[in-house]
Amino acid sequence: MCYTCALISAVNSYLMHQLNSIEKRAAIALALVFSSRMLGLFMLLPVFALYGSDLAGFSPMWIGLAIGAYGLTQAILQIPLGWLSDRIGRHKVMLGGLAVFALGSVVAALADSVYMVTLGRVLQGAGAVAGAILALAADLTREEQRPKVMAIIGASIGLSFAVAMVLGPLLAKFAGLSGVFWATAVLACSAMLIVAFIVPRTVSKAPMADTLALPQSLGAMLKHRQLLQLDIGVMLLHLMLTAMFVALPTLLQGYGLAPLKHWQFYLPVLLGSFVLMIPMMIVAMRKAQEKGYFMFAVALLISAMLLLLLLPGFVALSCALLLFFIGFNFLEASLPALVSRIAPAGQRGSAMGIYSSSQFFGAFLGGVVGGAIVQHFGYQALFAVLAVIGLIWLLVANTLTIPPRAQRLSLAVSVHTELQANQLAKQLTALAGVQEVTLLLAEQRCYLKVSSAHFDTAQAQAVIAAAGA
Image 1 (spheres, one colour):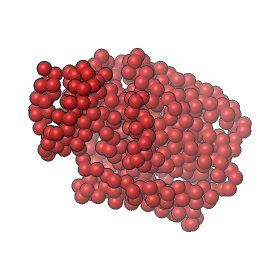
Image 2 (tube, rainbow, N blue to C red; image 1 turned 30 degrees about the vertical axis):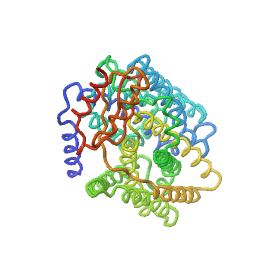
Image 3 (cartoon, one colour; image 1 turned 45 degrees about the vertical axis):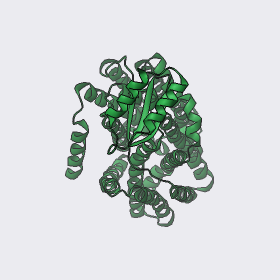
Image 4 (cartoon, rainbow, N blue to C red; image 1 turned 90 degrees about the horizontal axis):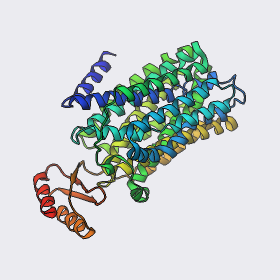
């Protein structure tokens, strides 16, 4: 435990280093908004299969639908609400989305049937403010410090998942299933107060193509083979996670672990997986073995499913969950980083928008698939299907090509015709270290993907200045 605390402290110190006061405030406030919302969504996972049995219409199929329902509206609305935030303002979209999220929580808290709980979850998902949050984080940060702020927000998601695994069972034991949803509504209202009074306001905007999905880029991103592999990967990852929680709480109870004590199982498993995942991340990056460890992490997911399928008992279940979350945590951290690296210059916002939608759609599919299989064929069939899904992913991942690391820059330009833009792009492409150039006339901005070892920023700025003279 001390090692974990020291590790978290060291990571936090590194991430906060060289951030100015506005960036620190933005990072902490937006991480709190993001994590409080995700905490409310995650808390249902470990408890619904146990505490929802008194609801009218309760069945394994509806367990899965209620758990995964938020993912469908998240997947559908993630990109449109990001676009809307660019039109009417980030704060307005965030406040509106959180209000809808709170409304969904209240509907679920008052529900006496599984159908109304599912409706509440659909409403929760309709508060899809992730795109607006990340775009505002980009607005408020300098380009060189932006990855640190994004990492802080990303880390808050993992932390909220761990807290939800502990807090969900405790709340459900003392306040019932409705208590979990009332707590979620309170969290949403607290997040609205943070947005209204703590999150910094800004009228300046980060380069849009790096933060938001652009309509003209979506088709190209869906046809990009490497990005499509990663989108499918995150969809399958969250399908497996959500489907597993259709069965896991009931299995734990079947092995004699009272619902109130489920957190005592989840907490050491999650902490252990985090501690064991960190060395994998370090070695993968330092030794340039990212693909090998990526495939190893997928293999861990498959191994976990096979353990659950072939070896009954509490010890096997514990080992399987530890293996699963080592692989899950590694992939959850690696996948968005790879999307950001592979995305063409000036199209990272579109790539990340499709990635996020795929992630939430996977959660929806996991609930539907998990509930249907458990209801008609049982838990063992579910683990067998998930193992096959993992194997298919492993085969797809074997064809993934991971490019070398590159730096991304966005520079303002002053060109007024397509001909001028093409000439400038050709001149910039000829510079040493430039891998990709994307020039958007509407934004009057040039996006570069460069090798930091060979690229000269001053030289590029001189070329841009000459073109605009």
